[in-house]
Length: 554
Image 1 (tube, rainbow, N blue to C red):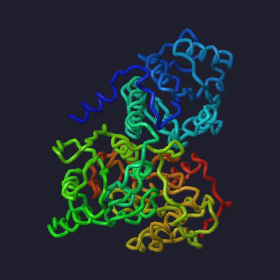
Image 2 (image 1 turned 90 degrees about the horizontal axis):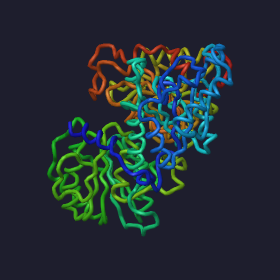
Image 3 (image 1 turned 120 degrees about the horizontal axis):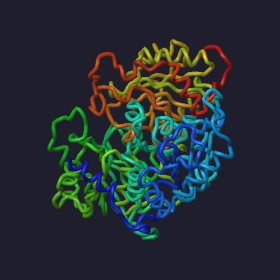
Image 4 (image 1 turned 90 degrees about the vertical axis):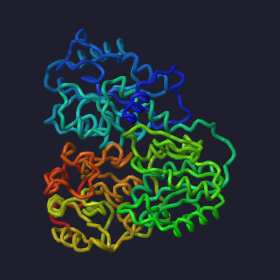
């Protein structure tokens, strides 16, 4: 209940327009659907007298304008193709929208019918790309607000953020699949501004560098990767950065920019299954942390983890300033106790803690995932020329893996459509990848460490994967992702970040938000029901053509 109250306070806080300006931000622009989002949905409306703004629209848009954000409308208007109204009628309707809601910096309009197969009609990403270019930015620095699944899907396919404002006409499945859901347009605007505020460091840029900073993220490779933007922000303001990570995150830590030294140590209160606490190991870790002689520490955790056990060790190690996210009362363990509303994407969650500690990304650094590509080896020769599709069926967590039968059918269908498919997996997944690749793919199972896997993904046209570390590797490399995402954790928090993405799977399945590691429903139906043809459609939606013409690639 307390988290819900904090989220509501964060969303609904009313501030002076000038207070919504930030020294730096996640977004340059907000893109808005027209019918059902800005104005009441009147089917095929060609009459300006029927334009009715949704409640609070003008005030909400003025908040965005006051924050320095550029605004564009992205709207499907198939009524033109159907002959329901003329181009002149459409201009009159749009002029009336601007008369009531204020000016927009750009109008991106698709005039086609669905049967035309154009690249601009949502859920295709064409309108998002057009609007971003017209506004002088990129899709990754835009957030799209809309009322149906086609809006959020178009944003995701372009790499933009998305917020859904459902109406009574919005389908339940579309609401379940949306990364973020708002109650109304003013609420959606409040979410945008709150996230920008969370990640804006309160201290001015140009301050002197702050000595040695110990940063912590003890978890798996994917968790370390999504913390990268926060760590880079710390590195921009520190003379030296030492990263404490666990054994499962070490390989990812080696690829992060901004890290000068790595300490590898398991934390028994983080790992799952949790081993017994060894007093000797805890004393040794405390001594090792003391030897770093850190001036301060920033402890990054996932939303369900506590930073307080490690904060106690850091106090014993003599660290004088400690920053962490904590809902629990920290006593004297934390100097900066930060709180974050539920549902914020993990990279932004990390950035917000860095900002609360006084660290910000430099202006030239985007708040996206990144790895050091200079540390990658050449990709495996068997992968062939760039442009192939990587399929990674496995995961260390059963519920997040792609079912084997589906993976096999995907290889077969993509191969028949002319795609060259490379199947990857860890050393303990060799048998799995061999069976899947036998359908017509190239088997690299068990032959790639994390850096080798990154090199293979870097040459791919896209990655097909569940909710597991390679998805975040692809995001860090700018490689589009077809995300077979089991809803055990929120997609908006853990989905691929700022990279073109298509989400597949039943977002409203019974396992939703359970954080289950073993599928609670026989047959893994949230993913096993996905038709392989949907993967083919997803690749075409995000603009990944088959590199060869027909036939099964091998």
